[in-house]
Image (cartoon, rainbow, N blue to C red; front, side, top):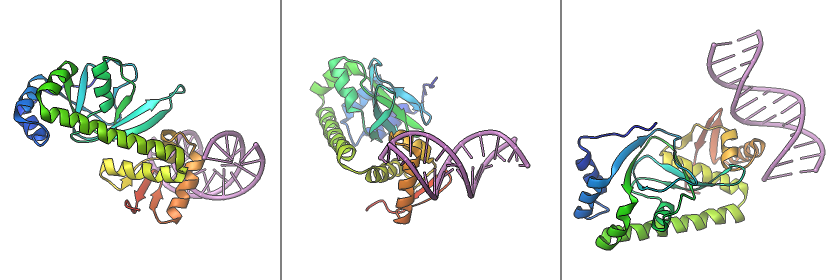
Length: 221
DNA sequence: CCATTAAGATACT
DNA sequence: AGTATCTTAATGG
């Protein structure tokens, strides 16, 4: 079970955490109705078909948002990081449907949960909330289009490189402790193929690798 | 030492 | 690109 943290300094931390995003009155409301929870790495905090009662706001850490096909293969859609929320949840909550995505913590992650029954009122009363929601839809839409583009038009080698750089970005570390087998599973490929491409990327000096270890050498190219 | 597992190699589809 | 199979190498008891 994930423990609920009852932090004494909770209002102050929260207020200072999100004051760059929301107006003071809204922060007060958030303080009032939201609940902070901390998850360790690898926890599923939302799954397909789950009822949506709260929307998440990331305080620290990162979350992978993905869909799942009939054979239970995951497809990574995007990562959520500090100050971000899941627009799929926003979408589901306004329509009062169940979740169409699965969300798993990439590392230890603190999340603020806000009951969805506030959404409608906040959309009307707070300009900063409306902007936040629209901005959120906007960035996710762009990311999804990019994800589809990568998936359909790019080679597996390019996708692998993006997968690795994205992962090292969210972890804030150019060194990844991960095996080829896990990468293959996450990209719906096979271990041999990933090993082959990894070898190629290593020869191109894009990364170094050892057992269960990959170091990304150049983020920008 | 040995069992387990990661990753390289080769060949076929 | 994916699968099957074999080999090599690292890791941890």
